[in-house]
Each structure stands twice: as C-alpha cells, then as structure tokens.
Amino acid sequence: MNLPNKLTILRIIMIPIFVAVFYLTMIPYNYVISAVIFALAAFTDFLDGYIARKYKLVTNLGKFLDPIADKVLVSTALIIMLLPYPSESQIVPFYGAIAVAIILARELIVSGFRIVAASNGKVLAADKSGKVKTFLQDVSILVLLVGADITPVMFTGLNLVGLILLGLATILTIISGVECIVKNIDVLKDSK
Image 1 (spheres, rainbow, N blue to C red):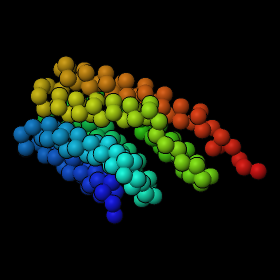
Image 2 (cartoon, rainbow, N blue to C red; image 1 turned 60 degrees about the horizontal axis):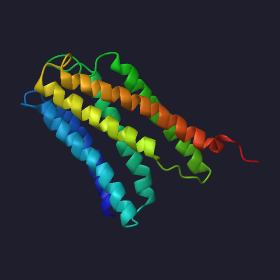
Image 3 (cartoon, helix red, strand yellow; image 1 turned 135 degrees about the horizontal axis):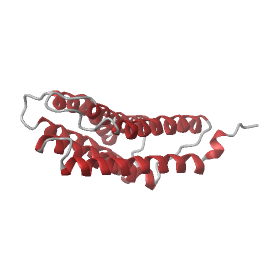
Image 4 (cartoon, rainbow, N blue to C red; image 1 turned 60 degrees about the vertical axis):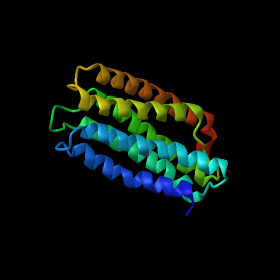
C-alpha cells in the first residue's frame, strides 16, 4: 500500500475520533480540538492527492477510497453540527439543515453520476469549482467548530462568518454539481 492510500485510510480512521472528541464535553475546548482533528483530516485530502499525482502513485484503491473519505468526513461534520449538543444548542441552526441537505444531495448525485461514467469507462476528475467548494466547506466547518468553543454559539461573529461561508459553499456545491453534469451529460446517453 502506497503513502497516498495510507493517508486516505488515516483520514477515515480520524473521522470517529473527530466525532468522539466533539461529544466529549468534559474536555475543555473539545470543539477546538475536534476542529484541529478535522483540519488534519482535511489536510490529508490535499496531501494524498498531491503526492499521488506528483509521484505517479495513483491507484484504483485511491480513486475509490479518496472521494468516499472526503464525503464521509464533511457529511459527518455537518450532520453532528446540526444536532443539539449538551452545552448550548446546535452549532448550525435549523435553517442550516437546508444547506446540509443540498450539500449531501449534490454529493450523492455526483457520486451516482461518477458510477455511471465509470461503468462506461470514463473517469470524471474533480474540477476547480469542486475543489474550491470542498475548501469552503472545510473552512466553514472549522470556523463553526472554533466559534462553538470560544463564545456563545448562535449570535457570535465567528458563527455568523461560519454560516456565511457555509452558504457560499452551498452555492458552489450547486454550481459545481451542475457543471459536472452539464460537462459530462453524454455519460447519461444510452450506447447503441
């Protein structure tokens, strides 16, 4: 197993650790610590891709696991931040569920689209808008997590910034999903 695949597996292992620390409210600054774990996991996404491309270590296992690890990490973070947590209320208010639903729906749609493409022998690489979308999602999650520990959650500056970033990430999520499908619409055509 090569280094990029090990980094992807490390990211998958970090997800339950991230969740456990998030809920361990007896630990001071558990949300900041969970934000650090999330940041490290998100960084492995950049790092494994960089190493795989630079040193030509791209594998089928990596192509399979990397997008799954990314989607599970972000989805898990967004879902647990919607749930009420012991010290206050949820980090992402109820109307943030719309953004989370859009983000999750896009990920499922594009994943299904990629499966159809793969069955036709076509690989759909992430484009620039998808990478920017992922970056904004990650930053919004980090800001919201840190804001949950530093100040009361619902009306703070950090929470507002995090929610604005989440809104921008949601808009980019829609744009990148539509771009992916429009650019590759031939994938849905039946072959004769």
